[in-house]
Length: 135
Image (cartoon, rainbow, N blue to C red):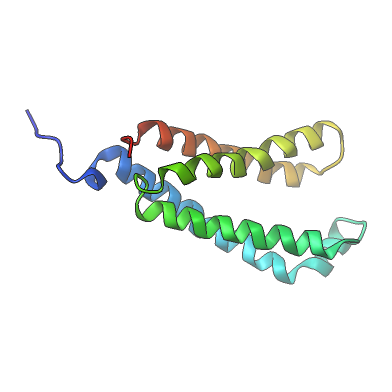
């Protein structure tokens, strides 16, 4: 019979959470940061033009902040476990909104794909949260 690791960060559920949150943060940074340079292209490819740039750039800034939070959670998921609850809202909030907006014919299927990606991350975050030892 194998002995359980004494270091809580070495447990399999914790290791999986570390990887999931680190990958989520890195992939999010790589996906979201370039949006700072695409306002004009988005106006051209997805008319009408952005009429409230403060919402557009505010969305990017808040989303980038969450990617940093995911990286932080990934360093020590047990310690930052309370932050995971907020991360669940972040992921499911956009995912659910995207599905509802698509069903109302207010967003494109391309945007819906990003909503599904967020929902997939949200499911992984739920699994991480459930499998983590309580802090």
